[in-house]
Amino acid sequence: MIGPQRRHPGELEAGVLAVLWAGNRGLTPGDIQHALGGDLARTTVNTILSRLYEKGVVVRTRVGRAFAYAPAQEAQDAPGLAARRMRSELEKEEDRQTVLARFVSGLSEDDEQLLRSLLSEGQGGADGDGAADLDGAGEAR
Image 1 (cartoon, rainbow, N blue to C red):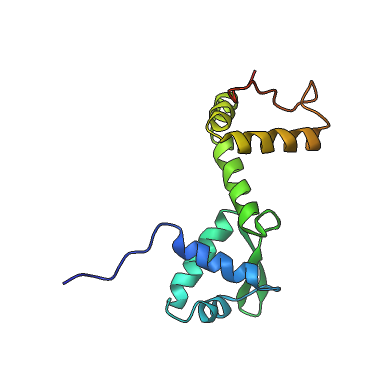
Image 2: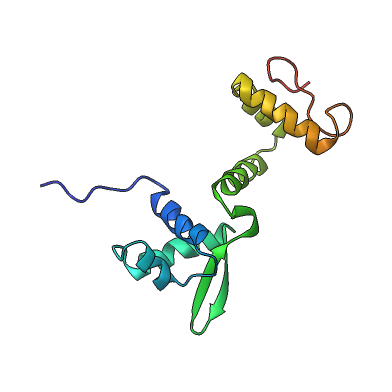
């Protein structure tokens, strides 16, 4: 007999975040459980929300005896969350230059050009103002 199919890692968190992103107000665990179709136990929804709160991905406010949850400012959408995860991973490493150089060297040519453009716009140019100076292979110089 085959047991229930296991979900991919992060699938439940992604579902909860999708509900929070779609809402225009803080949602209680019951609201989220209902929006997800009621298939998850309330305790499971609470556990997911607690983990997201501990990671700083959601904020919460007291509503009666429960909490209402909303996305944290820097995780208001999927791109914001991805950027937050990238920063979190970078902060774990002591050798940030090597990590960034290897990240950039793995980018496609189009993504590297997009990154150069964003750095130029956001930093007023990539020469001497704190922005990374990249060679043609995407390595930091």
